[in-house]
Amino acid sequence: MSKGLTGNDTFIDEQLADFTDQVMVDQAGEITAPDDEDTLRELQTIVLDIHRSVPQVTIDQELSDRIHRNLIQAWQKEIHHKETLITRITDIFSLRQTGWQSATQRRRRAAIQIALAVVIVLVVLIPLTQTQESLPGTAFGDTGLTAAIIILLIIGSISAWFWWRRGK
Amino acid sequence: MNQEADKNFTNPSEVQDKELLRRILIGDQEAFSQLYTRHLNTVYKRVAYLIPENDVEDVTQEIFIAMMRSLKTFKGDSKFSTWLRVITNRQIANYYRKNKQTLNDNHLDQDNIQFSRKTGSTTRETQDRRIFIQQSLMEVPDHYREIILLRFVDGLKFQEIAVLQDKSLDAVKSVFRRAIEAMRKELG
Image 1 (cartoon, chains in turn blue, orange):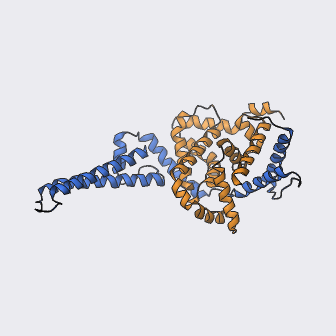
Image 2 (cartoon, chains in turn orange, green):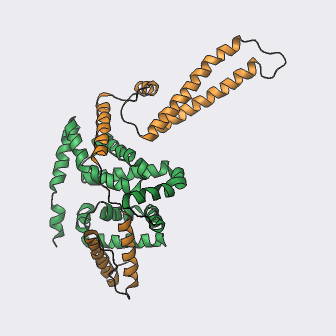
Image 3 (cartoon, chains in turn brown, blue):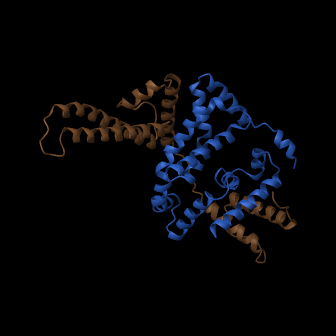
């Protein structure tokens, strides 16, 4: 604490704590500090504001069960499925989701799958472009097309690597 | 009030947590389910307060999965509930970090709808105030935010917070008053 407590600070500490207890227990909604206690009145207002901002939520059974199911699935995966580089790669290529994944993880997995699919398609396309005859006098012959594919290949690989790293 | 006695008091629920942890570490799935059931409500309430409704379920799951993956590192130096709160806060902070832009764009309107649903409130002013309070809460120092969450969201009494944080009751009340002052400054 950078500065010592004054008697007034201690008084306000106690009064504010008591008021908060009252608000939490009785759901009281009125400021109790006298008019000449400006500081305490302001702090009590903040206490009431914070209290009112807290929603009275209770978790419903369906949601609880759903989370529980996903956790058990994740638990079993954790126990039986030791994560290695190979399993990470096979998990990504597997169309069936293994274990629970959050929305962010699902989006990331989809991004990696798309990027890898692009890379595979481009790898297949490169040899095909080599067999086609180029159009004489056009700028976009074999060489241009191959270069474009290689650039896309690099972009696809970098994207896949980026999302892979974010997933770690 | 005998604060020493309170500090030395061993909470039965703490003993149960330790027993469950021991069983979990030898692969007892039932113990894991019990631990989840014991702490779900506390975690959920905090997440539901701080995270937009659409992502509450995901974040709650992420917290328990993070807990599951870190269980081996839990040394028992602090209470399990304290350790779980640290994980909860970290996951919530991660959520805000990852979704900063999206939250800036959508949080206000989305949350207004959710608040109406949760509280039945219809006044725009009240809804805006609630969101403003939540945003301000994310701006105050961690130890101020924590004491506010412990008292208002987790519903712990000041004495319980004092035991939890290994502080005197007077110190806790003092931090609480300063936390409310910090909120007053944030709220203008």
